Image 1 (cartoon, rainbow, N blue to C red):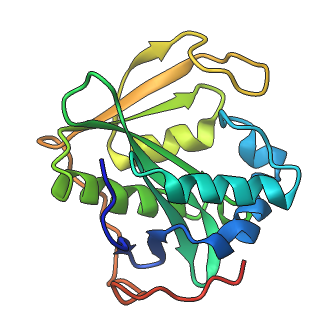
Image 2 (spheres, rainbow, N blue to C red):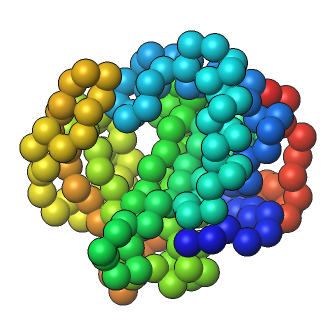
Length: 197
């Protein structure tokens, strides 16, 4: 799953764009918050160098799609698609959002934009997501996205020393009806506003 060129996906309030070196400070703003990283498989960032290393890794990785979630001129979070081995045209959706942007529909908008692109441009057959059962906010996002809950995987992944059960959700291309995002994009497609970090 190679990301060619400078991918930009624009919605009414959200712009998805490629990760840049100068995004490290914006990433650190959410990745250093334990409330944000509670249900993520990577550790909370304790220094800017942690976020700089993450950004460098993402920029060098051509096997998955990872994009910045930009709201106005702010790095609001990150979203991505990772190929699922031994599955036909399948990718796993993952996202993280700064706490100040929670509960306002930004994660749903970003996920809708990326899933639409995954089905249309990558010709994916299936997009799936795993979510820790205690993570009620993310469960609601997946359900509003139209994902179907397939079951529960017991103690499937490790989160900061804990092993919560995880719900497996999926979207099939032939069944998906994307949520209505409302008005036209606020960002011109292909434009990359400056990120303030």
